[in-house]
Image (tube, rainbow, N blue to C red; front, top):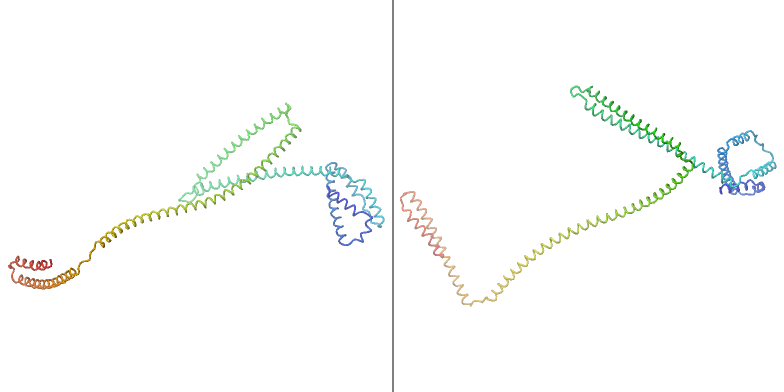
Length: 396
């Protein structure tokens, strides 16, 4: 309303005849701003006029029709000289001052039109919701029909197209087809019977409710306008409570999302920490195994060390107990060793000679055995045994 009043003031300032003489002194920018203000004021007045027309149509449409008819019958005024225009304009302004509505009346009309607009919007919403419910019901019915058709097509393909084909002739068996059709018809009949019974029960319930409503009307228990107003007030209170609960629900949902995000972060941290704990446990087990092996090696090394200490002590004791022999004893031992080596060499020569003699004797024995088979075998064996034993006795 403040914008409408300011637009009227702008328009009155534009339409003032005393200022028309100063229009020629204005610059182009000032004229452009003045024209734009005039256009805006005209738009606001058009909206206001449209609102008043709708109000008059709703309140008393006959007067508005008569006014429109009189305005259409009046001839258009012809333009005359400038002085006449100024005089008519001033006269029209004096008449408009007497016919203008007050601000309170305009506010009252605007509030009524606003309420009417809200009611029309509510009616449009109700109508749109009804249409939407009808469309949803139609879509739901179409979905159900489509599901039934798909099911029937699947069953027909399963039972008739694939299951009722004769393997020899590759043709559909007529008996199975007729049997399936009869079963479908019987199922439809049973469904129709169920729906008929349900319809009859609903009709009975409707009659009972109508009788109860008539009884309440006769008893005077019908709801009046006051009851409806009270119900509206209670409904508004419940809607406010529902809005509060919805706000609380939204706040709790936000809290739940925040808590869920925090929980996810803590879960990720827990997963990382559990993986780190598993790694550390495995490393601890490896270190324990390594420590056990090192301890076992340490025990073995300690045992070897004790054995080495014992042998070292024994060798040290032997070193301490060792006495260097005399020089003469060493010379005598060396001389004895030289004699023994000489004896060994002489006996080795004797053994070689004896083996050569043995070989010759064995060859002679073979020849003699071939020539005559009654030679004394035990004496020769004794001689050979003696030949073998002689070097052994000498070596000892």
